[in-house]
Amino acid sequence: MKIFVTGRPGSGKTTTLLKCFDYLSKKYKVGGILTLEVREFGKRIGFEVLDVYSKKREIFASIYYKTNKKVGKYGVEIEKFDKIFLNAIEFSIKECQIIIIDEIGKMEFLSNNFVIFLEKILNSDKILIASLHLNFVDKFKNYGKIYYLDFGKSDIISKEICSEVEKYLESKKLNS
Image: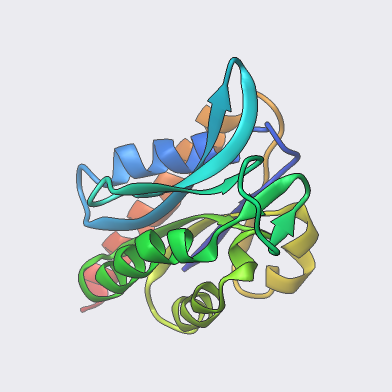
């Protein structure tokens, strides 16, 4: 089962995945990453990656980073992303029933490790709940269900996703 959430920036994709994590992690082992905004004086200045299981985090993109890898106005330090991502995903593949990835987007695709492990997860029997940049919908639509998120619909969509995942896991349990 692969579920993708997409929508315009600020529509609540990360919030939706966080709600799914909060609910599902009470019943199941859930791992993965979230990409969170870093703000300074109310303005977004970068992004950090958070391992949802260990709670380790690292700022990997910032307007202050002077690197040759850029997405928009953000310099991206892939080593910092990989430091958190690799531990989170290796653990999740081995130990977790559900993997959350926020986000499948331009910054993350700068990491070769991200590309390798994403393909591994997509071709596995692991449950994946991921937010997906609008530019990548066509590339991933054949892997699973895509939810288009409108502003203010995070509660409804997260409950629907959690219900779908629970039904799937219950049916797997009954069939084994």
